Length: 78
Image (cartoon, rainbow, N blue to C red; front, side):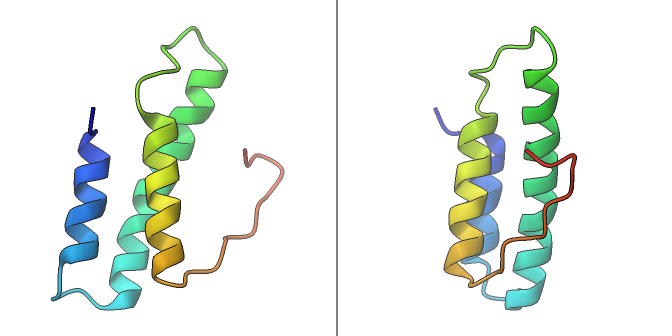
């Protein structure tokens, strides 16, 4: 099943009107949200199969395609 975020990632990547930097910025927002949901799922009885891992994987693949560097991870990063 395709998630809303996966569709949004595809839309961002296909948008010719967005610069590389704007695409990266929008994808970083999705990545941050996906990490937050993944973190919440790991700390509560939420359903771990709600697609957050897939969203995170897809956004990382898209960022890699754009040549975005991996953000520095702090102590709270997964």
